[in-house]
Length: 188
Image 1 (tube, rainbow, N blue to C red):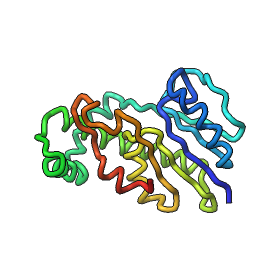
Image 2 (image 1 turned 180 degrees about the horizontal axis):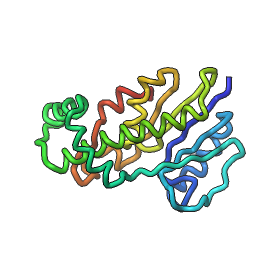
Image 3 (image 1 turned 180 degrees about the vertical axis):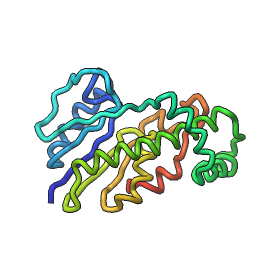
Image 4 (image 1 turned 90 degrees about the horizontal axis):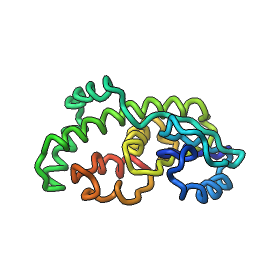
């Protein structure tokens, strides 16, 4: 049974960012038969050599103007209202415009990224595979994976967290969206 990893990065192996993945990719390549690295860097040239069993795909982390504007429709999402309750009761925070905007854009990215990720998975995935999705950051990609877990229960979904994606105070809104669905929806 082939072991496949869908590895979601911000820029690696393109551009100059995420240099720390250069060492990790060697370990991952030895543990998996095939790795599909999905980078959000759609403009830079590839600057890192990859092991032979690694392939790349790309999609932008940024939303178009229309996608951003239409995120207002996420006000009708049950997840939006559940998150409002969490913010008030668990985080003991008042709701401000910046938090609402952050939530709406995150929900929109989760939906759009979910469609893009589903397409990538369907391109490479077979029911007989032992597959994993690994988001290097606990961001909106990890949120999308937590939602896709319902459609692909057999695929192990994991994320990693580092600093800005862990600590609320490291963010402008002093808030990180959808931590509970991410933690509950992923395998690790």
